[in-house]
Structures are given as C-alpha cells and as structure tokens.
Image 1 (cartoon, rainbow, N blue to C red):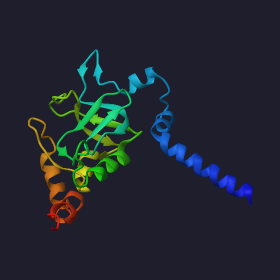
Image 2 (cartoon, one colour):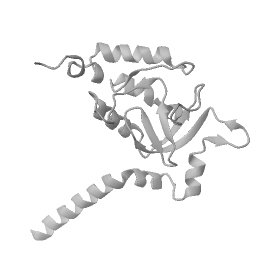
Image 3 (cartoon, rainbow, N blue to C red):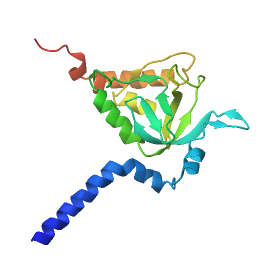
Length: 186
C-alpha cells in the first residue's frame, strides 16, 4: 500500500514538473537546444534581403491576450486585435484571453506575417500569428477573447476580423457575454 501511494505521489510530482517546464520541453522537442538554433528559428531580419513578409519563430510565453514573447526575447503584438488588459487592473475576461492565447501558441513554432508596419511605439513586432494554418488573431476574436482594433495602415484582414467579431457578439461569447457587458448590481 505504501508503495502504491509513493508511486502516485511520484507521478503527480512528474506531472507538476512537466507543466512547469512545458514551454522549455516543447522547445527541445522542436530540436532547439542552443542559442544558434534559437537565432535560426527567430530570424526577424535576413541580412541579404532585408525584412521578411513572413518568418517562423518559437513562442516562449503569452504576456496577455494579444502579445507574446519569443524565445529570443523579442515581443510580438498581434495586429488587428485588442484583448482585455491584465496589467495593473485586470479587465473583464483578461485572464481568460491570456490563457487562450497561451494554449494556442506557448512553446510552439509559429509563422509571423507582417502587414505594413514593422514595430509599434514600444518596439514590439506587429504581426499576424499562425499555428499551422490557424490565424490566431482571428481565433481570439472568434472566441470572444479579443475585439477588432485597427491601426492603419495595418488593415489586411479587417473585413474578415469584423465578421468574426460580429459572430462572437451575436453569440455573446467572452467579452460580449452578459458577464462583461452588464453593469454591476448595486
């Protein structure tokens, strides 16, 4: 009996450790084991041809619902969306938006697509983010984790995003749910 309990505790400990280190584990699973590997994966600029329209990178962590940090330390702000804030004062559905973003991208190789602008005023790359063929900016809008927010000239998917936002509003998902839209009771 003691051996079974000890075995269960060891399994639980292993699961907890795995969840804690899973982004790093995913990097290893993608064959990224050194700084030179990271530099190859996270090339944001090709010295021969200049800025690239698309690039691949590995996401280290989700900062919030519309911003991630790559394994090379570069931050990426998703184009065309705005999610609730979690810094200073957490807005309604902010933590859920961060969690959804993390579930989509943390520890994964993503494709970053540039529109017109390279960076925002904070030095973050401005990109559309894909996992496989899934456009994460759009998925976050579709799930009610973000709303459409455009800053010309970066408007490539504006009509597409507006359509997804309308669907999320009509279905009262996330930000559009009664939880976030009704005023608090007195």
